[in-house]
Length: 452
Image (tube, one colour):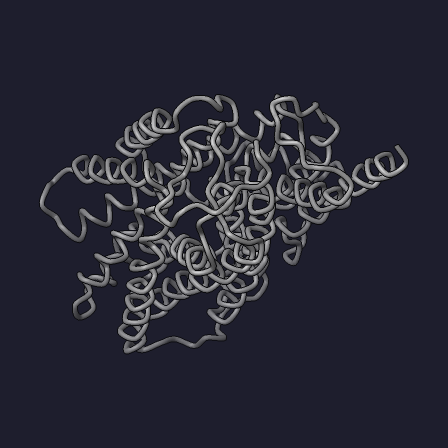
């Protein structure tokens, strides 16, 4: 794969196979528009309840929850932005970059994991879009027509990804900003409880929720920034755009929980959406958010398609688009989002240390050798070790909430005489441990390259 390509006309579209070069057509505004739209989602206001009400601890104060959102988002956005740089520098998509870390065949392992997580996210997004559309436009008693429409629109957008990015930059982001501000103003007209009443003991557990949402984008960042015109626009656009809008999305949920929505309600998603629709002209504002949510399902679906091309590089991505979007639509017809938080924590435990290992190896060795994204990239099984160590660290500190899985890791904690404290962030600790475990291997590799 070519390491660099000349700029193409603004109308250039993403290549159909990995044999074709990636056009460098996305500038600062395009990147901010893309990541700004990806940072705000209808899942964020609903997910705010997991920040405010940690499953294993007391309710946080709104002050603590707000700071946890900011800290978690900044940490996660930095991971996204750092992971966006290699794509801009090499022109390679994210899972193809894994060839340089693990070798071509071993790169199929993170590729398979990434496809599963992206397929899961696509299903979740289609479910959310369909549920929100049904609540906004209750024309049909059943959910399936809304699911089919959402799945079809996702597939259409996935076929022309760069054209969609340009539309997001020109129109969608401005509409989202105005809509979000309007909803904030209307919700804040209601009486508000004390911001300081509640606990700080679950602060890092709450921050982990925001980190988990953000870091799920890191393994696909280069799928888009390989089209960036510069490294600065790739890094800055991802960090600025994503940080601002994810914080805004979670804060919107926290404000709704502080004013009109009861956090303990059995049907939180329905009540949260109803609160938005209930404000004056709320149906229009909520309609904008529903339409904009399609960029989430599109981004997940497109990156799943590009990830599949790491294994089958010569197949037209439009074939994969039909397969991925079809499976996701069928999944959305059968599934719900009751296990959303467990899904997030499991993803984070895999993706946070993987991102750490990749970034240390890429930036630690880039000056001494060219990052190998070819079909002949040699296997590097040793790099799996720090990834696994980071995964184990995350599970020891935060195994999620699935009963048998939690009990297993609690037995390991007792065997290690490890007492998990509320200030121990699973995301931060697993990232740092993975970094520390990767550094000796990278240092040894650099020494051999310099001496050899």
